[in-house]
Amino acid sequence: MSTLERVAVRRLGAPGFASPLTFAQGGAGEHGWFVPEDAWLRHDIELGGGDAPADPRLFERAGPRQALFFDPSRVRAAIVTCGGLCPGLNNVVRSLFLELHFRYGVREVLGIRDGLLGLDPGRGRPPLPLALDFVSTIHLEGGTVLGTSRGPHSVAVMIETLSALGVDMLFCVGGDGTHRAAHALAGEIATRGLSIAVVGVPKTIDCDLGYCDRTFGFLTAVEKAREVIHLAHTEAGSTPRGIGLVKLMGRHAGFVACLATRVSQEVNFTLIPEVPFALGGDRGLLAAVTARMAERGHAVIVVAEGAGQDLFSEPPPGRDASGNAHLHDIGALLRREIGAHFNGIGQPVDVKYFDPSYILRSAPANTADAILCDSLARHAAHAAMAGRTDVMIGLRHDRFVHIPIALAVAAERRVDPASDLWSEVVAVTGQPVRFG
Image 1: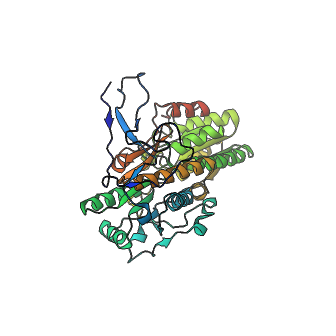
Image 2 (image 1 turned 120 degrees about the vertical axis):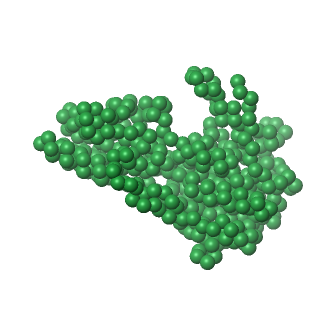
Image 3 (image 1 turned 90 degrees about the vertical axis):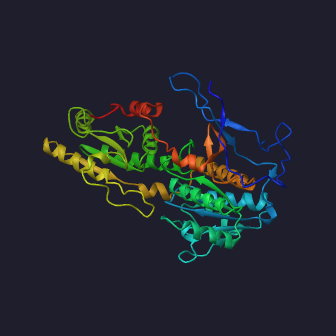
């Protein structure tokens, strides 16, 4: 077995203050519910069963520490939500405020408005001081009460704004782009010798951040996707030779499409970015759909938005404000090609096309995500108070850990075509492992 390797997390300095947290019903052991400094979690918990050696890395357990770097009574914190909407953003804002305000006694928590744009005084709106009345019911709504935006911003300007506001800790709630910006901020803060903690909370519907088994918003998106798939199935089965075609989110990772397929049990073909497919030929998608229509007279197809991009001869149609390449509309292509194919063989079909992207993004968090949001937010508060910085809170093996942001954004999660997940999708749909 390889020698175990502890993944280092950046710290602002040595702790010098006692935690104000009290646990009247503390757990067993001298530390109660505090997490001792020598608590680590193995990255790889499976041994044997293959040629690949076990990953020897250990990640620092997240949670409240007895000794803090910051004096809570003198802390000013700030929260920013960035990127696209995602179920649970308001839950995170609320739980962060409640943990900081009630449990740590933090004097002021600022809401940075409209994403990182709010850290540029020349372009954004001033921060919003958060209060209990303001956050009391925001978790019941979708979206983000702080607003959000995309696009690069000057690291120097943002740090100058944080310093001018007297911010001691910044909580960045977002996906990979947000965490890249957080990493850049933490690096420049360290270069300038400032004591500002930067802690990330992972938000991405695609569930594609590295070393994090689940990000908030993902299961709500899967639940909403299942509802749309059921509607597509109803449409397909209610008209002669009907086909329900559903395009779901997933630029590079097909987790939403895979899980929604498994939950619905009504999908016949699932297409994801990680598994290339051919349209034509004896083993292509169109041949498989033709066989399905001959046998059952209707079909449901689910496609992740990033699937089949290699089928387009043109380059991607530009980039968004965050630098992400715009995708070709694979749903529109499939609708066109399926219609043309069946018209060409004299067997017309009725294709109903569903694109519920914004329904998935803007919904309130479901129960599972609400619980995850609360845990992620409170662990983020604990990490910042203990002086951890340039770190993201990750869920690993049902435990919360500190993941260095650079590591998280460098190891994007993808669906492994050799995994149990894809095997289960193939079993549910009855489709071949690959088309073509």
